[in-house]
Length: 133
View 1 (spheres, one colour):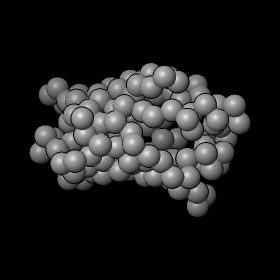
View 2: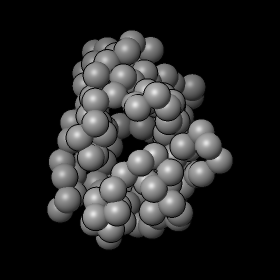
View 3: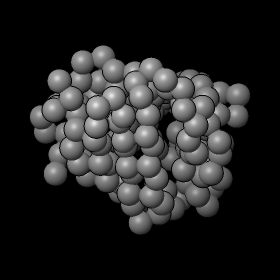
């Protein structure tokens, strides 16, 4: 069933992203730069190891993980975070614990792309839309 998830995705839009970054404590300068950058996500799986590569003109990152297993990763602004990613059908959910807060990122996939919902757990939610390339 990973065939719907695996692939490359180009960000085409975002809604409320600056407010989300502000709510999770990202500095104004970093918010302004990040808000003007479109990401490309490369998602692959080999055996039980998943990889999500995020590339942009701002910063590149890579996460390797097993579903349901805690792993360490940095936030885009360099903070250390504990992460767990789970799967339910065509949806991946990432719980990221950073600075005493749990952030939820929900990736919802279909044949044409993905919607990424970012929830700061304090009522601030952002959405990013990606198309499959």
